[in-house]
Figure 1 (cartoon, rainbow, N blue to C red):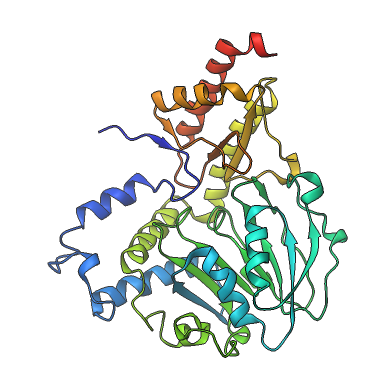
Figure 2: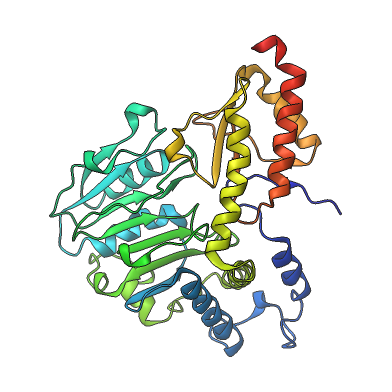
Length: 364
């Protein structure tokens, strides 16, 4: 069996070690005679799996006391509605910083529940930057300030935690959670779809400060009331059990690699390899401002987009897949999450050099 280098933005590559362990445990988890997929979510076996997964996540992120960790469903798009349902707490408006496609989705959904103030936008730059903090026009009466910590499509990432005063900061970290240390105490709420750096699609992680929950909108479904979910240890309804199990294996794997400090060093090294190759080339280029480039999602373009299909075909023939850019921006995109080994990035860079040698002379 030959595994490809999978550069998909999500669902994304998982660590091979995790996949092998899951395969070994598929029919019989730890001698219990059944698969995790067959377990009752209220049975002692699965309760133990979920408790261990939560404990590992708390350890990796150094989650302070006073925060709840919730295992939910619905993904980041679901949270675009669930967060305002829970966090408005009688207030009428929300502040947003617009940095790309995922910010725009969050803004559009929030307008169903509250007034929206776009405190800053990167639209004028073509969404290739993060608006400087001093330009943000924040409302001190807002329920919270929402940011997308890493724009998966546009490839821009916050490399700082913005100070927003006493108003809670909410961050969609779907595509960069666990890629580096985070000071959770600086945030009121963090949410993340699991299918990029954590596990399979279907699981959503929410880390929320306890004092922010308990006042949902009256129409909030019980399964999405953070207080109800927290009071029931994420077992109010049947959670995505197998996805939680895989997430726990991934958390173990991250700890074995040396934790988030080691993951950050690993990810910075991979990103530097790719960005250095792009910056040294007249044939490929990165559209994102250097100081805001994502460590996780690297969009890039060829000098002649007519060669895109040939580039993608050649990459696939060499065992590198899912490099096509999102339809809204075109070009290419290499998603290099935690599970992408440095060898995969080296293979991509080598192929880029090869392709440029073959096609570059006539397109410079």
